[in-house]
Amino acid sequence: RHLRAARTELELRPAAGGTEVRLSSQQTLRGLSRLGSPLMRRGQGEILDEALDGLERALAGNSS
Image (tube, rainbow, N blue to C red; front, side):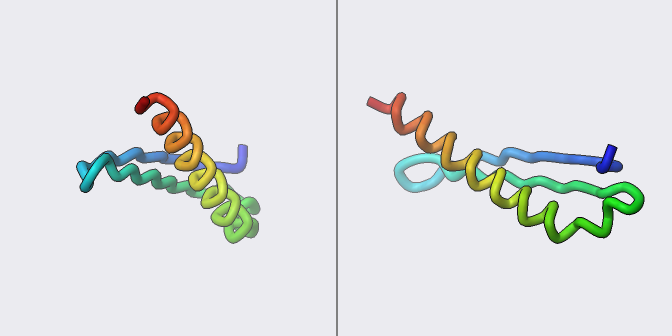
């Protein structure tokens, strides 16, 4: 209801000793929801950071 559009991208690149993972998210808010855009940006950043941490934990546990 609050979003006009939402896009999430996952990018993988070879890196020394492993793989670099990059997550990005773009959201376009609808109507009066645009007034809350700073809060949405901060919240999305936290969600993406937690997702990257979870991927790291999951993959590190499977590497042995």
